[in-house]
Image (cartoon, rainbow, N blue to C red; front, side):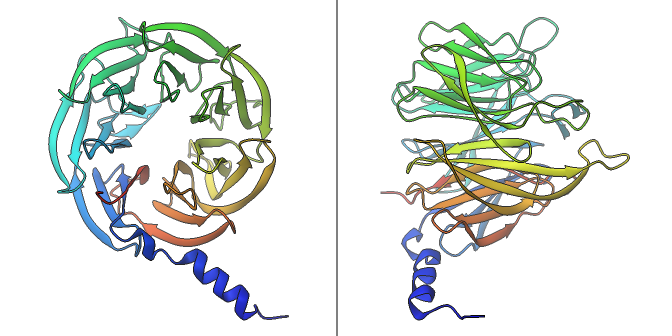
Length: 360
């Protein structure tokens, strides 16, 4: 077998060299660990751990205020299998890595998805429904760090939320509910329901014209399950215009600044007594956002749950809840660069991710 040439080795070393990321930090949630961990983005060295309320889920970084927002959805467990819903969002100073506030959304509960509008100073937090109200989105003023409104999504369990770049339209994926909710953020009202076979993660195109939604809702009991893939929603008509097929059910979806659409595929086989089945290594599948062609895929840890990328779009980060790992992937070569181990105390491990560029 031929050996890599010196040029090949040099190019590979250039791709994996991350010294240009010195000072950048990757924040990672440990669900059962009730922590947010901070890693050096250049060396993968663990820098710090911040204790937060039980069952943290997602993270969102506000670059203007350099604050990290963290939702805690449940007292223990996860969606569909928990001991009760929490009501809080924790605010962490990204540089001192200290908790500076805990925003209580009560009577709203089950906060999960986060979407930030830096221009308007608004943070949108998806919350689950209850006996007296449907699920919805709470609007937080990022200056005062207090809720200033609520928008109904008319679904029991809105989970992930994303907004258009102009901050005028929002989209909630609703797990088992057969639609994606479209809301007018200026008027604070639901404007459309886009039919889908359940939905998971989502991402909005830079021009706000398309939304990419993973579906169907992930379940090991749904029979027969609709074909897995990424539904492409045309925002102008609020309809699904295309499905990008995946080999296995996809949960997280992310669009990089360089126009690559990333989907984390969960692979499993049935196992008695396990609601999630026996997990196999997941896959990160990459599509071109412009032509929608499949560019390739790479193996990652067990049960990929969140995907993000570096600001230059060169690296992907995939958190995997069952293996409690974060895979760092070179998106040019689709080769693994590193794997971070995230400590946990129970079944659920690594989840929310946020890339924190060094201060200007």
